[in-house]
Amino acid sequence: MECWFIVNTKPKKESLVERLFQQKGILSYHPKHLKCGRPAPFFPGYAFVYFDYPAQFNLIKYTRGVRSVVGHSHGPIPVCRTLIAEIKAGECDGYIQLSEECGEACVGDEIEITTGPLKGVRGIFSKKLKDRERVAILLQYVSYQGKVLIEKCKLKKVGGGGCHGPSE
Image 1 (cartoon, helix red, strand yellow):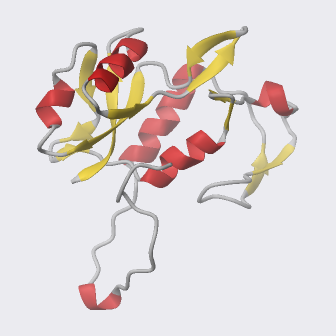
Image 2 (cartoon, one colour):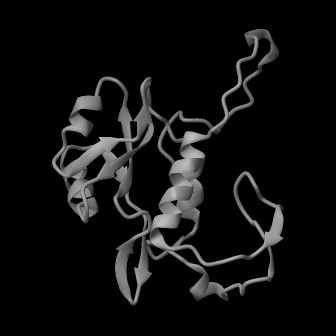
């Protein structure tokens, strides 16, 4: 099944892994942001990779610089392409735009989520996230994607979405 997955890279090897995947013709995505005017990983130690599981699993797993493929005992956890599209939508000139560039919220400010599955949800801004906190949220999101068992006769295809191809 071709889908997006997350790989955990060895420390500071995100760019190497991205380059090696590119050389192998494997689509990967490593979001970056500007930190003190220099490119930095948005999710340090992690990258998204689009591959065919299980056919290409060993090729991915044993690529130099890869520590592991994020998953559980049943295999790697797929990431829906809509998540990749949402992250890419936050880019400007190839970099994720953080709050400093678009008017930073202050602690106690009311905020509203403007895109993604939680669009329209409001809350109170509590703190700016550090690199490791962004990684923790990403991994929690991937680990806790809900799964529902339902009879096939209660389903109908409505088009788009899901893990049926890389995002544009």
